[in-house]
Image 1 (cartoon, rainbow, N blue to C red):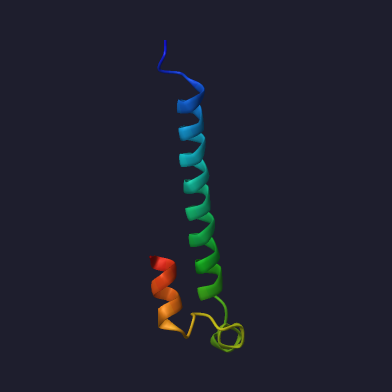
Image 2: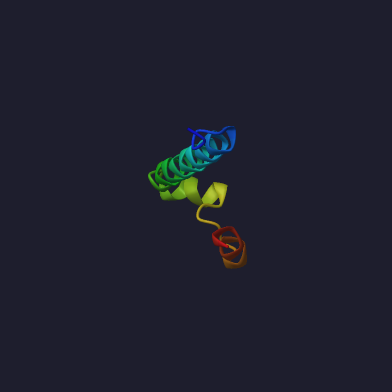
Length: 58
């Protein structure tokens, strides 16, 4: 049963954490997109700098 090593558990944990992060990001973007246009403009959503968005999409 060498397949269940601590390394495997760490890899699964990192994968689960990345999935959770992606879900939170999508949820946050949906919430921000649902705000009225005036509020989105005040907070700068969506980002008005295309190079920032390109770096984030990376």
